[in-house]
Structures are given as C-alpha cells and as structure tokens.
Length: 302
Image (cartoon, rainbow, N blue to C red; front, side):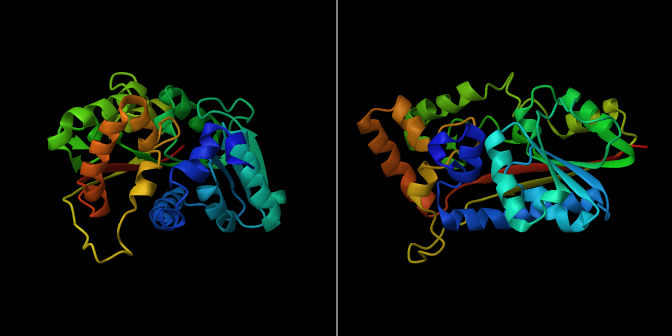
C-alpha cells in the first residue's frame, strides 16, 4: 500500500516513526521486542485461549502471542486503523494462520462488537496515550474479559518528562539557541497541551485507579524510570553515529510532524540553518540526556 494512501496511523507505524531508516528500525525492534515479551509474560497466556490485542498496530504483540495460544487459540487484532488491520491480515494470510485470527476495527473505549466475558486476555502497548476516555477503556477491558481473565498493558508515562525545561530540546542542551528552539517546541506544545492532551494527562497512579474503578481486584504495576547523561560517540565510529537525516525525518507519534516539517512551519530558511548547524553535531555525537518512565500494568478479573 502506497504511503501517501495510508491513514496517519499506518504512515507513522510503518514509515515515519523510523524515518524510513532500516538501521533505526532494527535498533528500535530490539527495544520493542523486550516490551512485547514482558507484556506477554504478564498476560500468562495458555494454549487455547482467546486474546484481544487493543491497538494492534503492525501486530507486534499479536504475532508474538500466536505460538502461545496455539492451534486451538485465537487472536483478535483490533485497531482504529483499517489500513493497519489490512496490513496485519496480509501477513496473517502469508503465515497461513488466518483461521486463528479475527480482525476488528474499534477504538479502545468501545468494544460493543464483542460480547461480555468473551476473551481470556486483553493486551495493549502505548495505546491509552491516544485515548481521552481512559476510564471507559478500562471498563471495556473488564467487561469483555472472562472470570479469571487477565489484562496486560504497557504505557509510557510522558508526564514524567513533559514539558522539558526551556534549555532542553528533546534532551539536547540548546541554551545557545533557546529562542529558536522555543519556536519549534511551540509546534509540539500546541498539539499536546499539558492541561488536556491524552498523552500527558495521566501517570502510573491514574492507571492503578482506572483499573480498580473498572472492577479489577488484583492489580500489579511495575514502573521503570531511567535518567541517563549523554554518552558521546567518537566521530570515527560511524556505525554508532545517529543520522541527522533520519532524526529530522522521524515523527515521535502519529499526531506530530517530523522535526523537518516543524522547522519548515515556524523557522525562516536562515533560522533553520542556524538551528541545524547547532543541533546536528549534538545529535550525531549522541549528546542527548535521556529521561524516561514506563509502566507495565497487569490485572486479574476475579
């Protein structure tokens, strides 16, 4: 499917989140597979079970679960993007497992197409950050689960590091060009206003509250926080150098422009040149300060 014909969710998942850079894709997949494996461990899948993967995207979790549920089990691929469901369905057909899969176009807060107590496990990864009605989503997760069913989710806690202090831009120290950085930052802040963006309107305590209010009596949460100072890369080590071209053509999520697009919106050509001259060496020598918070939540419906 041509990229220009895909919806914003498919464009991002299949192209824009990696800047169409195969090396960046492979590096990211190593991290994503770690998250997937932990989500599936927490889900405690057994052969013959039915799993609903909410916001399946390109199928990372769903495909990882196929062997765990076995020939008698079933995976329900669910997403709001028909393009991504079509993409997954092509892969499922190629794998010869179509008889073990179902495809459902639905938002995370409305699974009215599914009967109550009809699935054994519900999973998702980085889905609730796009959902305003998070409590309703948890109610739906609880409703469709059978007694003894499990919920296993993963969400970044963006509130931990957003907004950044004025002297930082994506973890890079931009003190010398703070005024230019603020112009670019404003593009993203308009998309994700602190007071009402679903990406930043919750933290790990809210996830626990949502789950408990939905009816889950057994709830577990693992919060992982990482703060790392820059680890500069030697200029001679080309294999480890981040590529500026990839960096500026990568979008952080489906709702955002790439840095290249954001600069074009608010900077003059001269300002873009200034911004690039300053930031590019910091990117290519890995001068980024990392602050990240991730939450795994799993729960049982008794």
